[in-house]
Length: 184
Image (cartoon, rainbow, N blue to C red; front, side, top):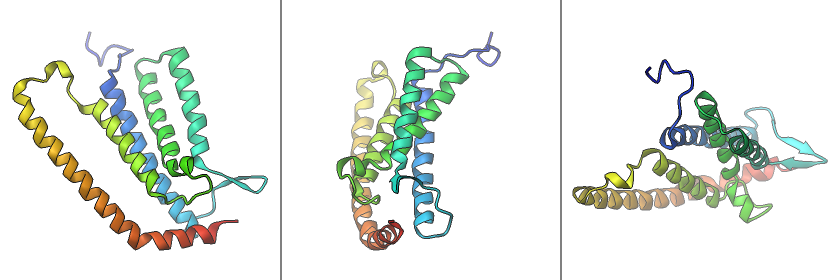
């Protein structure tokens, strides 16, 4: 019986990590877009307020992550349920880490660089789990390719850091103005 015919297919960690990575990145990007559109009055304010306090979406992520992790531990999903669980886990991580800077600086700006840096680190970890070959398959002949890839990744990281600082200098003041104008 092929895996397509089998009603319950066990997912590997690599496949589940790819799903989590996908939903993590999509959630982060959509969160940033929605916040920008709300702050610039291009779309209705969808924020939840309780007793005059804005409930940040990192809280939704924490509750969703708690539910997903509880489900994973107690139900141990397989097949389609595992795929959906991985997608929801990525959404929860995206919502939570999008506001990582606020973990460090309560009451700080939404547009903190720490949040973007945290998202890059989490995405890299998901990417490693999703796409790296197992260490058992790593052979001496792969060492040169590994070194070349490491140099490229480090170079890409440096370029990304410099570009992020430059972009932050260009749009940062405008984003802070929007945030200040939208605060109650």
